[in-house]
Amino acid sequence: MIYTQNLHTHCTHCDGKDTPEEMIETALSLGFTGLGFSAHSYNSYSPRCYRMTLETTEEYKRDIRRLQELYRDRLDIFLGLEFDAYSETPLVGYDYVIGSLHYLKKDGQFLGFDRDAATVQKLIDEHFEGDGMKLVRAYYEQLAALPQYGKFDIVGHFDTVVKTVEQNPFVDVESKEYLDLAFGAIHALVKEIPIFEVNTGAMSRGYRTAPYPTLSVLKEMKRTGVRLILSSDCHDRRYLTCGFDDSVALMREAGYREMYVLKKSGFEAVPLEV
Ligand SMILES: [Zn+2]
Ligand SMILES: [Zn+2]
Image (cartoon, rainbow, N blue to C red):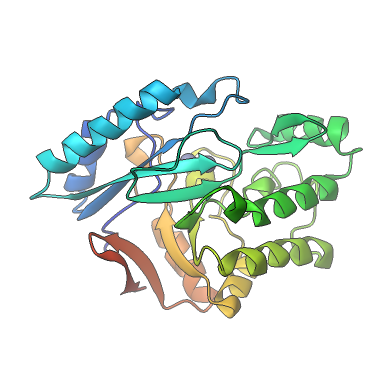
């Protein structure tokens, strides 16, 4: 299948490796017709905050708007934001917004769980009594509450909480208990945010051998009417289409025959070809 865009990308404005221009040139060389930038939102509780401040957020917006104009005849560039649920960044002036959860609120603290396997296990031991399912429960409950924090177009990396289970199986992602929690979040979110992403970012970073969501979760998404986009959560332009063929195969296995892409006029369905 020919891929024409990626809406979940990070550049040097936040924690990505490449400049926006480098990302754009790579997108053009791949034959893309669209490219979305989705820098992380600023939040005061993240120690590194992906290099973003409220000021640099404004610079980011100006820069992407400038490039949007500069490349207007060659590529549809979209200004997006990946908004962390408890972030303080105002949600104004974007073409689209991805709602994601990288931190959990617990006992007055913000706990970063989007980490490597050893750090996630430490978090489970220190804050969830050694019970991985308690972490999962907290994650899906807080993810389900995402619409309280703003108006979102896309749910980001839906089951990222289990990103590291291939290295450390702290929960069984096929167990009824796990799936009940994940499905509960799907049902709560789909009414407010109908588009979710299939995200291959953890594949490019070596955490997973398959994209997420998992097949069982994708099947439930199909049953409940969730629409999908395909992204690589790209932090390095070499991975702009990383794992896309595997993802299309997975979506088709879950029963999907189309996915969505963003056009200037809004989201449009495109057939999923083998
Ligand atoms: Zn993210
Ligand atoms: Zn991201």
